[in-house]
Image (cartoon, rainbow, N blue to C red):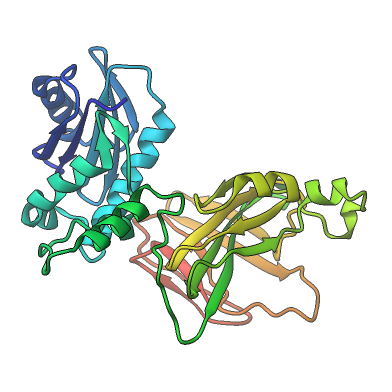
Length: 347
């Protein structure tokens, strides 16, 4: 699948080069670095083809992570692999991923690259599992045969994301549902497109190997039960589940059954296209008097029921970067022009 994996800085210099196959040479990779990375064109297209070589890359800060291949590979899988490599490096480097950390830990990175991919095929990418036998300071004490067997069992077992023997004095599980609404409306206030993107974040502090299960108010489940979907049914699209979720139980029962990893993780991400209830209605009016002066009037109206209250509401009205002077009036709240955001911010 992947012929080579590279870490490249913003100048186009190769910091890390790991070759898994011999079909893509270093000279071909340097062609990509000189033509794409050094000329700041890497961010435009994540997939570039040059001279029968496919270059798949993602940029985080000033570092470009590049995978090369000549075969017709699964691009979505390779991109997800690159994102997981960035997450893995941040887990080892204290949340940082920059050129300085890469140069300080290049030996550790090469060890990780040998473990997370084998002949171009992704392998183990769980930071908690890799930290069991690949450490920055080395293994401080010798492991006996029983400890080695337990580590190998966790790596190759059916539940590799959670080790055995976890104990807590108090068992707790937190679940947060975080949603954002994407809205496109006309100048007259008509909604052209609206969808909701959501994540279910879980923090687990449970002992042993617990099995958790919770149901969803999903339109498919309500239809199977011959109930009216108007009573609160929601059609959820584009589901993305954590690998700890048992897919067989989810397809049959429409319930999420999983053995959670220890700590914080994203259990599910989803998108909703239908039955989107907007919390606010925005009515903008923009008048251009000349090339140097515009007047914008923005009205915001809450459309949710009285028992509900919105807190920490922030409204940003973007302005041109060359804005020199602003005059602001607000009937409630406070609004001011913030040059660092190039916008009028109302709170």
